[in-house]
Image 1 (cartoon, rainbow, N blue to C red):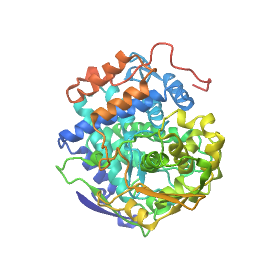
Image 2: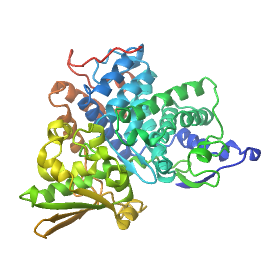
Image 3: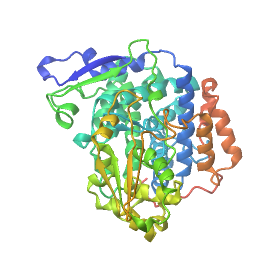
Image 4: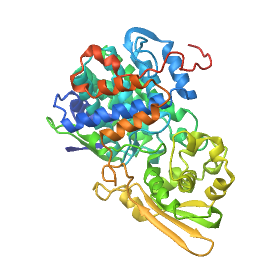
Length: 499
């Protein structure tokens, strides 16, 4: 890997494009280096994972709306829409919109956390949609997804967005554009313009993840994916972009991020170096914010040792800055303690999540969030006894570069009314690559089977799993099969809009 220093330049410098971050990203995307076999296997795992959560959310309100909008933009020879018959095709950007919303709705797919936060699986819907519409084969899709994951993870490692209240999808726009560039075999100049356009139109505030969190949390990444498809299309037609989008004196960095004195070091693969960033990412075993994964596993174990929940005096979760201030009591969001809060809010409340995980010893993507579960009186009493505190050591481990030290968990301290204390910690979730039970292909397949049970025909599930595991050898005409259809008549239709 090469570290590239990125600083703001006044326009009089006329910074050569070869020295601009967007150009360097484009050069990585245009590099035709082979994809390693373990990376290929992980890409297949994550396509399965995305399909699992997309089908599980197929009839949730935001997904219905996104799908209905997409279906209003039909196109012969276009891309498929999750849940629909593969003969139904729409424009690629609208497939990215519908499928990206379905993937993100449950907040239940892969994650990568560093200087910034991300769900790198958000790259898949847009890149896959373009592959289907443009007649690309499985090998081309693998190359494109390897690039998408690489660029997003490299940006996430080096450029923090959240401290400036910019949403993390600002890194997704450039990564999807770069991935599509690789998929289509575009030259560096076209990818360079597309990356800049994509960043320019995908910067937005983090209010979508604050306070009363709405359904826009599901739409935000699919919106970025859709805009990125459109950015590549414009660049292919010869249109330019705001430049330099990162380093200019009126750029994203100068006015939205660290300002005109900013200095970032962005790691990118050297020419000819394999794109392996996907191997740094981790799956979600539980349908909740990633920082909750290890704490859920920990709560399962600790809950077995409590016989009477009303004898709990208080519960203190010692954890990182991010967990405390984003999903903990440090956020100062009263909604995170509200039994009538939305699902989107509850899955960003570690207090609620730990209360339910302690009591149930299990976590379910639907049952754990129902109004009946959230409003159960004994749960509400326990929930309101929980608070978080930032622990400097957990924050330090959260930001550690050494994967053997890096941690996303915390310490749960349960103080009982009789004065006894139960105090345990967990660094990483069981499913994490360094966890107690790191996930392999069978785990992804089992997650698919659990989440799609009762929703799709088992024959359809086996067809999809058999096909996607042959991805490196899939011909272009087989790529339409990377889709999972519900039985006829099982997809709900929402309210009518403009389209």
